[in-house]
Amino acid sequence: MANPDVKGIELRKWARKTFSLLRDPPKSSMSAWLSTTVATECTQTAYKTLHRAHAPTLESKLLQWIRKCEEWSVPIVSGPTMRVKAKQIRDQMLARNDHDEHSQLLRLKFSNGWLHRFKTRFGLKSRRVYGEAASASERSVDEGRRNLLTITAGYDKRDIYNLDETAYFYCATPSKAVCTKGMPGRKKVKKWITVAVTSNTDGSSKWPLLLIGTAKKPRCFGPATVSDMGVVYAASKKG
Image 1: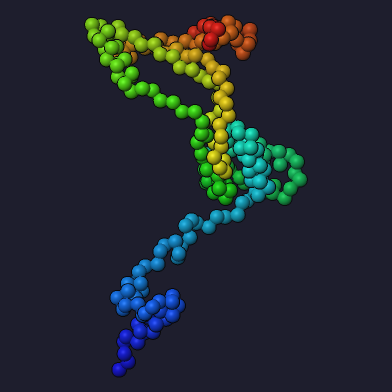
Image 2 (image 1 turned 135 degrees about the vertical axis):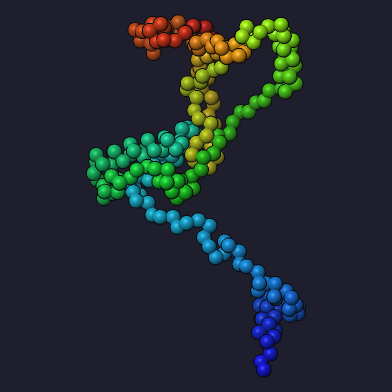
């Protein structure tokens, strides 16, 4: 009868010689090694096969545009803007007809799947544009809230109004952009319109938004008046 442990002995000798061990590894260790499942990443790819681009020239031009935006630190690249730019590039290529991708370009739908595959092919990710950060003092907020509750304690909710203002930075660039690496933020363009929002506590009365700019008659209004625009507008030197 053949010795069932012969293969085990040979394996231990092979392991000792191959890995320059001082002695044959124990039988228990060899059994554990042999029974261990091979790691998934060794037997399977981490992702599905990435298909070849249907319109490589278009994707190359789109990638050049993204890298140019990155080079200029203009964080305007996002999913929607990439689709718009890709469509512009396709229209330009179809108009020139100096390529052999005409049928492929006509079939392109610029779907979420196309966008995902394009970003994966070129290692593009949506990254936050790093820059200034600020935080408010929690202690000051709590103290202000307590003082406000004391002042308004004798009024009904419908008689308590709050006016808050916010700034609409209409020239601001996005805080995130699709790029190949982290992108430094540009100095913020601080052109804004102040928007005042007023409402009572129970929400039964909401005033129209008050827009405050620096010009008494903004050029963008053209010949129209403030009432024609259907907004409540005021001017201030500081905006």
